[in-house]
Image 1 (tube, rainbow, N blue to C red):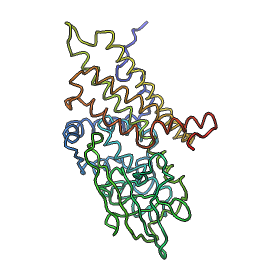
Image 2 (image 1 turned 30 degrees about the vertical axis):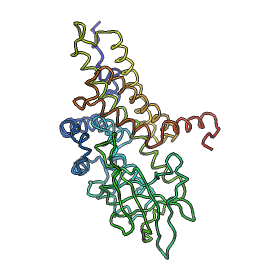
Image 3 (image 1 turned 60 degrees about the vertical axis):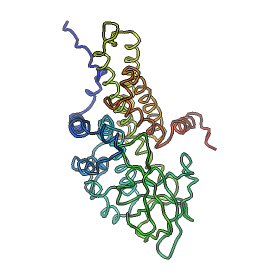
Image 4 (image 1 turned 90 degrees about the horizontal axis):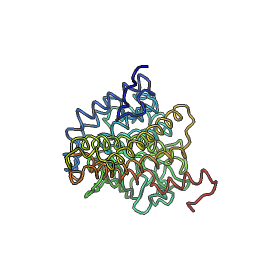
Length: 391
């Protein structure tokens, strides 16, 4: 009987073998880009709180912006392929994956889903190439987990609208040419496309962050901002609009968090084999091996969960509550993996010489945005009990 090969430490369950040729090719291409272009620079960008705007066009040239949409210059890739791209991008940095998630799922997707034909033709092709960056305005200073309590309003003014309000934590806001903004109207919550430079619309950078430092975070302020009738997204009324966008973005996070976790696990594993204490590698000690095994188990479970949800999505069978379960589990476990990896690196783990503390800090934000772990717990709780705990 032929000897079986030892499992690959970085793909212990052979999950890559469950992918098709196109899926593996896309994953390899994104992985190579991150390794060659992002990895050599990301620690410097993070330390300097700098995001290189030229990266947007590079991602566009690879067909990664709005990649899961079809037509209007978009690549029309599958949900699994989109997930694999998010996985490899976040192995580089959560800020990189956030850019792609916001551009494709929070800015392009609502235009693609709820916009007029004219809006789609005007915005989507240039957004797919990265020439136009979009952002998403939903969260407010006093409205986070309860977005229905938003105070931003849009009132009718002839055929157009007057927008007033304040949005916060808008990724890409400082570099965006168009903002997808959700506001309360007399008919319910509606979405509006607000081009940069519109009178009454200003953007203010959020500074002094210790997480997602290589990402642009902004406040969007609207003071008697006059919009024409062409600004309204005609295809949706109510909170279902913005919540559906969040669900699209959460799906990418399910995958992306495992990319950050894998990067931390890989770093800790290599360190455990080279760091000598008491005359042998620390990876030879039982406690270190227990940490590594626990990390591997949750990493591979999270990957299988992400792939399963991706297959469901491609089959049109994925429920929002299942995405919540994936986001809850995978981000929570990714953060635990990052923290365990930090302990294996010891004091070196708090420096940017290694990627672990950067991923750990970033994951603190990922744990919160697109729905906190508490909110996703209650979403799943309502799904299994039929009882609503929010209010």
